[in-house]
Structure formats: C-alpha cells, structure tokens
Length: 206
Length: 347
Image (cartoon, rainbow over all chains, first blue to last red):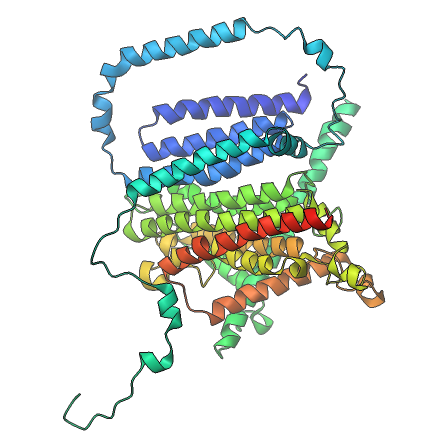
C-alpha cells in the first residue's frame, strides 16, 4: 500500500507528530506547549494529504491552526500562570491519571481487537463508487454534508448558535452611566450643528 | 535504477528548479514593489523618495538588503531565544510558501492542486504566528501589545475574506485557482456581446465583494491604514521593536511578499488572472504573464495609494468595520449569490 516516497513521508509526518505531541505535555513553558501542538496539527494535516483527503487537511489548518490555536495562544499568553507551583501538586493526581489512561488503552484494544467487517459490505460494493479522478473529495464531502444529511448539519449549526448566544448573554453587561459611542449619530452630525462661530472681543472671553 | 531516477529524482529536480526560479523572480519583483511603494508614497507627499543608489534610486532595495545583512543581530537578554529567532523565519517562509499554488499563466504554477484557494487561505491564516511569536518572545511591552492586536485583527478579517471567497467559488464551482481564472472567460461581458473581455471578470459581476476583498486584504496583511500592529505613534514598531539586522529583514520581506500575494489573489479572483482585457489582436499578442504582472501592479498601486492618502484607523473602528459592516454584507452576498445562481440557472 505504501511505497517509496509516500512511505518516507508517512514515517516522517508520523514520527514528528508523535514527538511533538509528547513535547506538548512535557515542555515546561505553556507557550512552547501550544507551539508544539501546532506542529502536531501540521503533521496530522500532512498525514491527511498522504491519505488523499486534501480538503480535510486544509480545513484542519484553517480552522484549528489558523483560528482555534490563535485564541488558545492568546489566552495562554495573557494568563500569567506560575507553572512551577502548578506542577508541584501534579503528582497527587498521578494514580487517577494512570487509571484513566489504562481504561482508555483497554477500550482501544477492545475496539480494534473486536473490529470485523460488516457482512453486508459485499452487497454495497456492487454500487458504483465514482472514480477519484472524476470526483474530488471536496465535492463528495459537500454532497454528504449539504445534500444527504442537511438536516443533521443544520441542527448542529443551531446547537452551536444557541451555545454562542448563551455565552454572549452570560457575559454581556450594560453598565449605567458609561459614555458610549453612537456611530450613526456621529455620522449624522453636520457642520452647522457641530461648529458655532462667535465673535470674541479682545480681553473679554466668552 | 533507471525507474528510480525517472520516477523520483527527475520530478523532484524539476519541482526544485521551478521553485528556485519562482523564489528568485518573486524576490526581485518584491524588491521593486518596495521601491515603487516608497516612490508612490513620496510622490503623494511631494518628496523625491529614494533617488541616490543607482539610476533613479533603482538599487535602493538591494542596498537596504546588504545594510540589514551586515548589521549586528541583537537578541534581548530576557527574550525566549528559540522562539525569538523562529518568528521572522515563520513569517518569511510562510509568505513565500503560499506562492507555490499561484498560477501566473495557464499551467505556470509550481503545484496546480485541487484545493488551491484553500491552501492559500490556510497559509495566509498561519502568517499571524510570525507576529504573535515575535511579539511574545521579545519579552517587552510594545511588541506584546502589537502581537495581541494582530491576533484579533487577522482572525476578524479572515472571516470576511472567507465569505468573499465563497461567493467567488459559488460562481466558479471549483477550488482550483486555474479553474477560477478560466471561468472568468464567460460572464456579463459575453452576454453583452463583448466576448472574453474585462467585463467578464468577477470584479463587475461581484462588485461589492471586490471592494470588500481588497480592503480586507489590506487589513489581513497589516497594511496602512490598518497597520495597528506596528502603529509607530503608539507602539513604536509593534512586534518588530526588538528585532535588528537579518531577523528584521525577514519580517519586512515576509510582510511585502504577503502583500504581493494578496494582490495576486485579488487578480486571480476578480481581475481575470492572466487573461487579456479584450480578445482582439494587440491585446492577445501580449503573453499572459505580462498581463498578470500588470494587474498585480495595478492592485498594488491601489494598496500604495491607500497607504499614502488615508489616516490610520482607530482600533475600535477597525473591529467595527470587520464585524459589523463587512461580515453582514459578505454573509448576505453569499446567500444572494447562491439564490441568484439557483434561480437563473447560471450554475
């Protein structure tokens, strides 16, 4: 399946991704952690490209690296957390952490070990699958998201909208007595109402 | 051994050669774009601009290059050294990387990929990291403020740029940059009787989006009047305060390469790429590359004039323009364009 250059790049991306992911949890400086997380995303995008999913690779870069991680970095730079103090108490959570890790690993083993192909798969193969050369995966994804499952897509959108409105309502505060700009009023001002010309006599003032 | 050579070594060498030619031509072009920028700015202010190095000051950019390279690099003692040195590299390398998919003529792109426009969008959304990393690693007040400003600014304007691109994609039906240019051979002009002319290009059919894209491109690349990242009257030079010599040069270079990239993107999306303005004899004799470069220069002239003529925006005005003006208009235009294409059967 993997041959020549593809294999070389696969192992390059995979090893750098794993190494960078390890650095995310082991580096002392939180900003370095975020930068390593970005490197991990980059390599994941590279793996997507090798798998032929160019649209997913680009969306991963645009959404996660271009927007989500920027906000992440923003918050971490602004918070002045003393990580030495933070880390000193970390060891007492080690047993619980190890337990969670063990459960997740066991679940992974169960899922991958019990993985079998569906018996109905043979009947599905008779349906024509469009050739990759004639149908780009961007168009195929678009068909699935916006045509086949449009209602689920819209519902997901509404859930996100509700979450966003909720966040805004929770943080929105109208303070009394704060001077605010009213852009429409500012733009509607004319020269006549803004400036008044007066004759001032020398030595008298207004 | 022969197959190894013809399958791997030869294509790799050809790609390498194309990339080197692209980078060399691009950097020389950027050197003169820089010179043009300063000359236009000077002309508006009734000054002469650079006129000492070489005839009419034509070698000014190269003199600046040598000046920067031979100066002493200074790393502040409180700086985070690794990130501090990585930041200008990120900024310059990403800006040049995005050029890999830009077609300057039919088939003249280093990589003609399916998702070209998404690639450019992805890379240009990453350029903010150079600024943030530089601002943070300098361990100083003004660079940090500049970094925070740029993070908010670039994320805000990416949203409207994204929607503008969606309207163009609705009309084209492909994410490939070459397809986007070729689709502009048929449009309003053809229906009015001027086949394959400048009236066919998207700037007319999608007129308000052309303006929004140009202004957003200025904001995205921190060009004046949106250069709040490095507003010298408030932040000295923003994220670049602590940088000197080659590191500063890389920041500077990255910024201008990104600006020229945005000009090229405007050309491809709205001004018909390498297509001649009229499909008659003297215009069709000129090679496509020349048209492409001329259009890029035209868009850059607009950028340059905006820098010379307009005062800097205030930060709250910038945010208001991005979120309360451009976002609703572009969102509405996406819906309107989709409805128009569906109802009239253009798509």
